[in-house]
Image 1 (cartoon, rainbow, N blue to C red):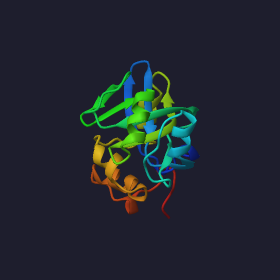
Image 2 (tube, rainbow, N blue to C red):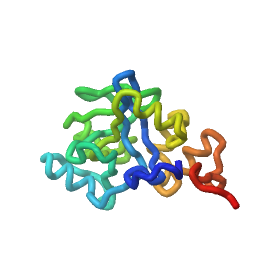
Image 3 (cartoon, rainbow, N blue to C red):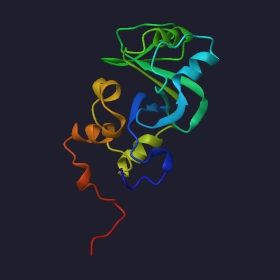
Length: 171
């Protein structure tokens, strides 16, 4: 939401992967980095059969040296965790190798993650810092980056042009 002042999350869409009493974990899906996926594959000693313009995403401000591969839940790799229907996440090299072999598949590679301590995300939602929407894998995998935020808002009937910072005043 506009009132969230943290620049790491400006117009961020986060795929929330876990939300328990102990805290929450998610991956930002719409903030592209200037790091090519081919560089990550090369560093891992894996082939990259895709377009050299394919980029890695900034998954969040925590542990940016760690990679997370969001992928279609029909695929399973070592350590794959089901997030919801149509979406899974893994950190396995097998997942990255599959992505490198078939980059046209449903994948999103991110470095870092977004994390919240016990009750933190719930408080931020209650304060109006975050708007929640149902998970739609098509938004993550099939939507151009510059349209992801607006499409996520549209899932809950919000027009981005009508959003107002809760802290602002209309005179």
